Length: 254
Ligand code: MN
Image (cartoon, rainbow, N blue to C red; front, side, top):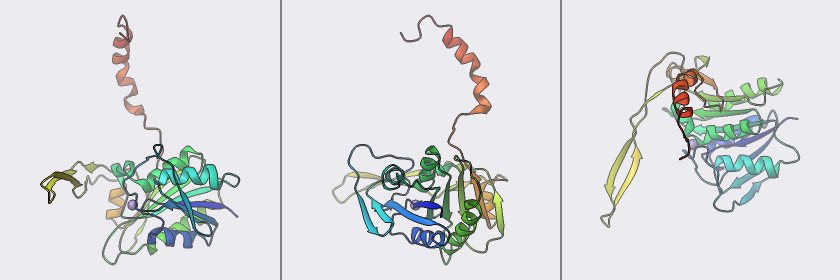
């Protein structure tokens, strides 16, 4: 039986991870290692400045007082050291993880870590809408994993899956969409008169065709294959002049 490590960024007690565990439990040997509290927007952060504690909550369910990336590390390097997971599945996140936002996402970053470890990884997020439910994403996760689990997967397989709220009209392979940069910082004062800030703002998206945002907006499940090589290959050559000028300097480090 294949082994699946399940994690998330909403915390081990979230409804999304419980449903994901239940639906994947029909297919594979599932171990849950997830943060002990919400870690949304923790990105790909790794805790190095304090010790981490892991607690067994029930059989094959563990909490860690750290980030999703910490969870994947503790699971792979310690808990499952002798029987490493064949796949890592993250989610189901409460709310979608689209486009530019994937770099903030703890849900998606857990799969970045899986990919770095050479373990095929899939992230699931459910759009928030009327009559919210994780059930559609959980059902789709089982069907997708059922297909993947029988195949020989590339070790750097990394899929970001978003499931729309409401009726599902199909599945699309997509690219990451672009968010209109509209993050706002709200200034307030506390009861003692001291200033504080809150990062706020509702994301607005460019409606480009072929993007994850467009798929979700059209009622389709979006699957975006990702990779971690952030090199801008398209513009690599356009810096030749800069490199030549720098190499022409007398002493580069003085
Ligand atoms: Mn989250």
